[in-house]
Structures are given as structure tokens and as C-alpha cells.
Length: 442
Image (cartoon, rainbow, N blue to C red; front, side, top):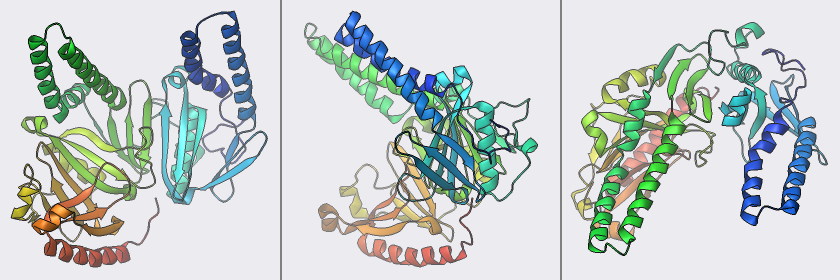
């Protein structure tokens, strides 16, 4: 079949090794189950039969699964053995097109391509597995169609001297040193609680040397912290972010690599996060909410714009990637009411809301400082809430709702009258900003 970057108008299939990779992905579970039940001839025979049957099933499914870009510039995918299914994804409503490379796929030189468009329900298609060149070619073709800037097959093909997973026309790029990444993940606020837990565990072990409770607690705490640290390092290893004509390109990963391309207009909210241990170094993490991605899933969509960066480098990062987002410090803040110290004793002095012609911003946090921002046109809804304790103190919380993600904009501790007035004024700004929004295209 034709796998040229510009030849996706013809019917194609994923790589012929797809059934093998799929059965290898599930075989560890079968092997572990066999060992847990007990290894004998009958159990081994049943396990071998399941692997053979599974391989045959995956092969039949692979034969019936095809994809192509039709004449209406839609990605069309057909699948199903007993019941045929045909899906069409309108590339003009593209939200994201991402490449992931699990360990087994990387070893064999293959990738998975996930295409997600705006729409209700399941609006995504995952093509597993494609050769690296085929995945990159299809990704670039979809991005070009989404931008209404179709290019020739030769220009869409990855350059021979560049990594196959990289965007060949990256105009600006920033890489996070792995040493800084490891240090930043180790110096999170949870590290302090781990140290406190370790001290308490040692004290318990000294007071009760034969009980073993303290040592067990210490081992569990250290083990959990180690697993969390390794998970973060392997996920964000070799993190790089760049700007190209197709959007913001993000790549990271040690064992499983992920490559995302998102349009700046899909970035709905941005958050700056600074744990207390990062303050002496002037480090920040930049989190993002992206429209159309299920960010509650660990395997779906980018959740951080960059995992750690110096404060002095933030202006360059935003000017290159999100120039319309002015997060400068010269802002006027509406601070929390004095009575909020009874409700939020640790962070009452930090709580505040800021509104300018472009952005709605919220700051919070005592040990971990957070600053969230969202353009007026991208706020989903504005609301004011008040719990029983807040009602007694005469304060309320002002929420600017964004798409699902790690950035949440809740202005807490505001005097109720101030929160209501700010909400009403924000409704007018939202309406005016949406009238100025001329396009939601990629």
C-alpha cells in the first residue's frame, strides 16, 4: 500500500506487525496469571491457546481496519469483523493529533497516532501501529489540512537528518535539562511531608524497637515517594517544546515517548505553580488546560506547557508560544477580605483576583503558590458559591470555569458584594471578547 506522506487519499492499513505488538502488550498479564495459579501442563496449554487465539483475533481485526483521507478532507476509518463500523473525523474541527511510542513499538520502529476532533462522545481515533515515517507523514498531512495550508508530499516527508518524530519546521525550541527535571520533581512540597513522616517513623521505631511499625511506615513512605518520582521522571524525560507553523510541539518520555501538536487557540487556561522548595531557585511549572482533550486520563493530552523553568525565562516562553497572554506582575489585584483569615488562615494574604482587558487571573497557595489565567473569551461559565462558614463570614468564592484540566480558577475569600460585582462585570467582558473572536479554526 502507498505510505507516502502525500498519498493518504488511498485506502490503507496499519503496519502488518500490529497483531504481534497487540498480543505482546497483553501477554505479560496472561503469564503473571499462570504463575499465580500454578504452572503445570494444562495451565500452560490453556495459556498458549489463549495467546494463539488472541493473535488470530487481532489479525482478523487488523485485516478489517482501514483508514484514508476522503475527498471531503475527513479522516475515515472502517473497522469491525461481525459488525462493520465507519467513522469520519472532520479535520476542520481538529483538536489535537498526537504520536505516542510505547517501549515495544519503539523497539520495532512503530508508533501510535491519536487524532481528536471537537464533538460530543468519543470523538477520537487511535491508529496503532504505524511505521514512524507513516505516522509522521499522516500527522503532518492532517495538520496542514487543518490549517488550510496543504503542502506537497515531498515537503511533508520528514527530513533525513532530523529525528523521525520531530516536526521538520520547528522555528523555536526549548529543552528542559534532565538534571533540573529530576531535582525539581524531588523538591516538591510532598518532600517536606515525606521528611516529617520519616522523622516520625524513626521516632516510633526508637520508642518501640521490636514493634516494627515505624520501620514499616518509613519503608512504605520511601517506596511510595520513589515510585512517584520515577514515574514523573520517566514520563517527562527529555522534555522539549517548540513553535512551528503548525502549532506548539511538545515531546517527552523515556520508555514511552509522546509527541503532541496543539494550536495556541486550543489553550484555554494557563497556570504557574511554584512549590515552596522551588522558591530559592526561582523555578516555576507552567500547566495548561487544552480544549478537546481528556486531561483526567494520564495518557491523554498534554497537561504541562513546561515542567520546570526559571522565572527569568518565562517572558521569552510566553512571547514565543502565547504572545497574547500578558502575565506581567504590573497588575491590580482585588485581595481577599480580612475575615477570610478565619476560613483560610494559611493563605489568606495570598488570595486575590485580577481582571484586565485581556485576562481573568486568580492567585492562591501558601506552601505551593499558584497563579491561574484565562482569556475572557475562553471562560466557559462564571459563578459565585458560598458555604455555611463563608456565609457567616460574609465572603464568597468566584469561579471562572474552564475546560477540564489541572488549572482551576477560583477566587476565594472575596467579600460577597465584591464577588457578585466582579461576576457581573466579567459576564460583559466575556460577551464582548467573544464578539471579537473571528475564528475558532486551528
